[in-house]
Image (spheres, one colour):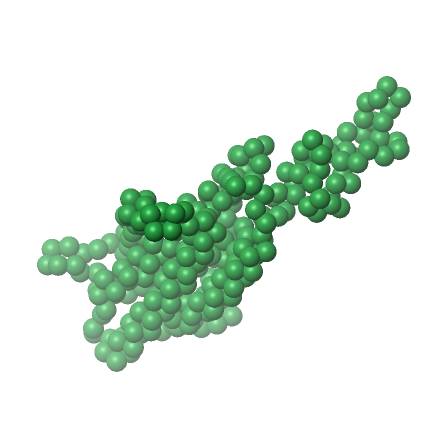
Length: 268
């Protein structure tokens, strides 16, 4: 088993030099010398990190939208029909329902039709890219809806917008998740070697953990540095907050396109 030429400078970690071997042929300081397999595993992780980092900025707006949508729901008319009032916290199940439904639709309708028309399935990177687009669209719709809600509140405080206006943006986010989350799991599982199978399945959990911590930090920072998120959401500019993440999402999508173009697949 020989080291590859990819990131050749890491191969020095597996190079046996003078002083590494004892007289009996054993390694004098094993902690200073890596096996070729360990070096190749490290190269695989380093090579995938740029694409992995794009998913952090993809998931952070989703976490922020989940928190802010509940605040929006509390300030809206939650009456649906004559006998049901929607709990504000339950609005976050809409993306989950949307994801479940659209995953089934993709698996049973879209991918078989794509296979018949093109002879092959879309790649994991293509599906992740579509997820990026839907995510940005969902945040943009969130900004538009909040802008309209604020105009209604300021023109006539006695009239509240229906909570049903929040459904389209949450459905779009759910559709985006049905594209990019399964594709990311498949991508990491395919591209990381056999010895890193457990790491490949943990990549998504790491993304979600970092993203939700980052979303909390960003919300706190925006509250400190701007007047967009006051205690009374009707006196703030949550729409500006959303537009900021539309811009960040657009930049991140360009970054993703660059990373996916330059990425060299290790195996099929």
